[in-house]
Length: 136
Length: 121
View 1: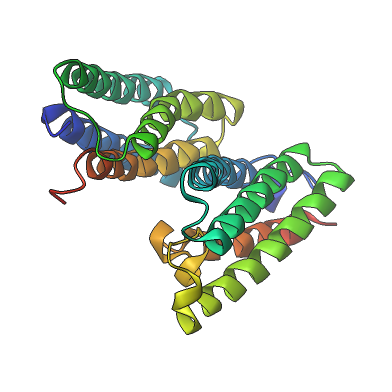
View 2: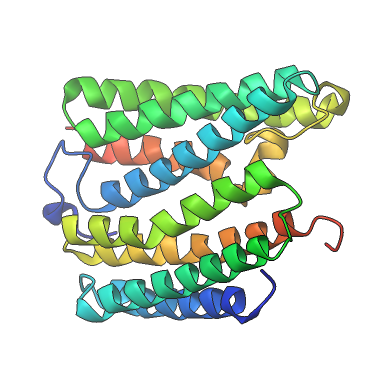
């Protein structure tokens, strides 16, 4: 963590940022395919959970694009996505523990992302830290 | 699906993850050995795919078909994705990318095996 000199200032898509983009890309793929499949095949079973999965999927896609674009607009986009994501994972995580009956099936964000090794909880924090670190 | 290739893919991927971790710790970009490693992992995943297709040809079928195919296609794309990203980022962080993707591959293989045989999990 001691090489700020190697990361061009302001660029979110270099160095550690590219690792972040890779992980966001994986989650975009995972959440999109999961949500798409669930919405198409069994929407009626747990509409709320599946719509939330779809929302998460969209946010992961937009965040990936935002981080990869690296410009000012991209940075703003990524910032908004990471913030929504953090709020989402905390809200849905809490709700899924308090009112489990509302979530008959899991979403990416259920139980704070436990089904995905808590990566959904850590990812927006890392994203915000990275955006802050590359900001000038 | 529960033949040797799933286990092989998991082991190879974990070995490559460790090897990428070594490169990242030494502040090295991924080199030729990592790219060859990704090719080997991809070969194991392809072998797994072929044996699965043969099994399906022989009358078996995945328990959760939709999810199964989704995981399989994603799994096949991961090693090439890691290779492309690693070449885009010729720094230690490229090695971290290979490391991360090589940790995701075993997870996907396990999920694949679970969606193949739901009853026997």
